[in-house]
View (cartoon, rainbow, N blue to C red):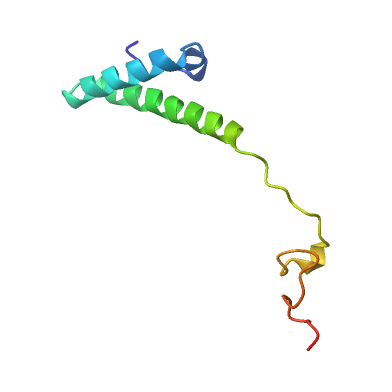
Length: 88
C-alpha cells in the first residue's frame, strides 16, 4: 500500500489489522516518509469511524415522551409552570 487507500479497500481490512497498519504507517510518517502521512491519516480515520459506530450501537435509545410541538419550552408534557403563559 503506497497510495491512500480507498473506502472499499479499507472495508476489507479487519479491525485488528487496521489498528496495526495505522500504527506502523504513523511510525513511518514520524520518521519523515512524506507519502506515509496520507495513508496513516486514512487508516486512523477509518479506525475512529468504526469505533464510533460500535459505541453508538451500545447506547440505549433515549425514551422520548411525545409532546405537542407548540410546547417546546417545557421539559415534559405534564410539567407545569415552565412556559411563559403559566398561570399565577
